[in-house]
Image (tube, rainbow, N blue to C red; front, top):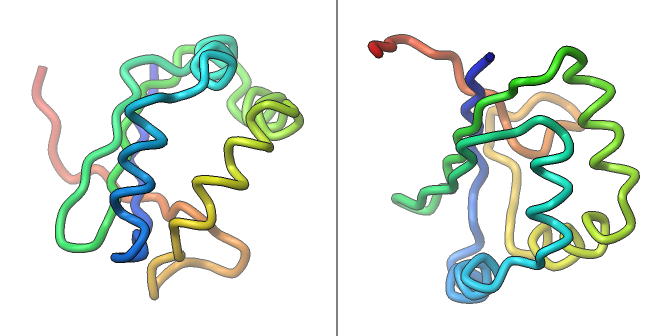
Length: 107
């Protein structure tokens, strides 16, 4: 298992819409997340930023992320959610959600 943490900005005028979307997340989206070996997935908000955390339990992360990106339901979902977001100022070229480096963990 590998832990992932990511961050993105949320457009202030779109926060309520983003929260409403996730309060009623599409079943197909949640199913695809699970099919792509992601568990314990959560998104948190603070200070204009969305922070996501999940655990990957598969063996080929890149292949699973490609599988998710090719899913039509997920693509439609992202049309809604992406319109609520902006990459952080330190995002790498082409990066949407930016990776965060783990600096501490205890079980």
